[in-house]
Image (cartoon, rainbow, N blue to C red; front, side, top):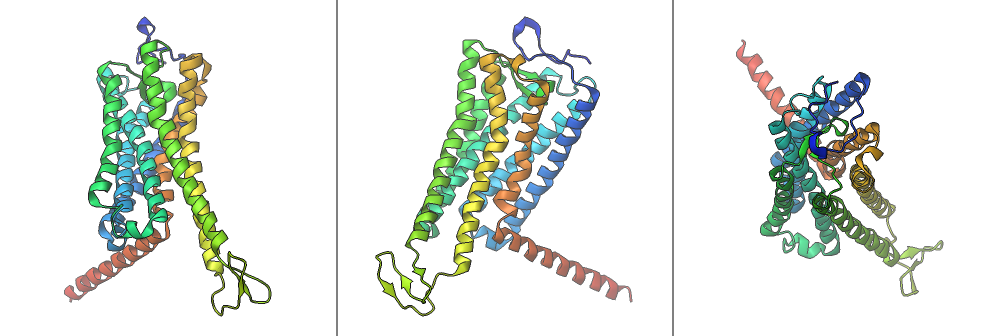
Length: 353
């Protein structure tokens, strides 16, 4: 294995250079390539449905934020994951072993990761507002175009500013165990400041915002359940004040209870997916800074990056394709496509006579 792709001179890159076996590299390359393929086409479907289906576009704020997240994941698949998979399978790590290519790859790696985390936080804020203040949200007071544009541009702006810092200081190197071009995990004070900002901007602040916003959603659902009148066995409905009334046809619907349970479950899934995908990657980098790069095994470093990449595959499912109105849009567009194809082939068949 040629380790010339690592910039080990001068002690700047302290990643422990334990060679990866051919089997480890091939398996890692296959997994990352598969993730890139699924992420690209999954998010492409999200974008196409969002642009062509008018009912999906009715949820203007959410559709714009979801589209921004989908664009982010597509760029990640094409410019971050695909080169990482190819370089991992190449004996010398080409093309990421080239300093110029590695620097650009590192910029996109950090730019997309930072933008994705902050965009997910923006989505959690938007969903909380839509539940806490539905009338104002429906009237587009909280979902105005200018407000949504700011929510979209903020993550992209912070991401590019943050990613250009290590690029300008030439801190990027190709780390095969980390699959991608990354910052030198050097424990010097100047590097530590950047790492602290990295951990805060990419993980701590978005994680705190997501926890707060989705916790408020769950709490609102819990309060709504407590305020919903409960029906006794004799058909009487007991109000929150304790007064029992005989209300015909006003008992709580099992469908409403089922929908609230599904909403809580979907919120919990969003929180779990975020922490499962982001936490291992951030923790391994934190361990490298505090205890030294050699404390993180190669397989652990590689696995944390693979898990982080999987977010681009999971995001279109949990934020778009898994939603009922999006599934209905898929069915509508599929039917429209079949109808257009049927009409096209029918006229082609008629023209043949």
